[in-house]
Length: 287
Image (cartoon, rainbow, N blue to C red; front, side):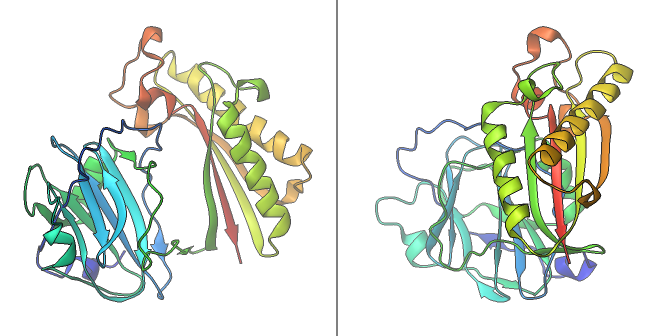
């Protein structure tokens, strides 16, 4: 990202909590560094490291998400000024939603990181620089509960030196498993959807598969396990009709960054940071 995406002075955004929200954090994805978006979009990463009440995120007066402490959300908008806010305990009048006081002057191709700071009422968010934001985001989980209702929010269209990123997906494995039977059921469904997308798309140029593990056990053994997981996903893709030549990078990287600092005893295998680290990342790029 260009340094200019942080050239604006820090600004305060409004935060609004969902009244009576008792939802628990669903099984969510860890943060992965976001890529650059196309010039026709601007990307926003809003994250909530710690606090005591929910923070509802509004984009141009419409609901985008409701963050619990420890969560983040990523979304894109068209370039231009947007009211991107989150307000604590704003019900029942919802003045923060109805009367936004701050706007983000979003530039095309830029990414903005907005941290929701602790609070219980009012306006407690600020624009942060990427290094500071990602040092915190690596410990958070992606928000997955609510469907976006903000009409100005768009699916992000990513670019890099190899072209547009069409899909970024994760296939999760059971503890210490690397074969097809060790893939979690929900991830098998994700894998089927990836295969369906690849077969229907006409602009897929390459597929990358990168395996990871939790930090439990020997690191050399974990490296081999991560490689085996990536190979399993590759075999499954080929079995379902994906041409081997399209899968140009299959590798294991051992212990995932998301597992650093997580429990390393077998009895801690169900910790969220361990569960989400036993995976294969699938990256599908297009022309």
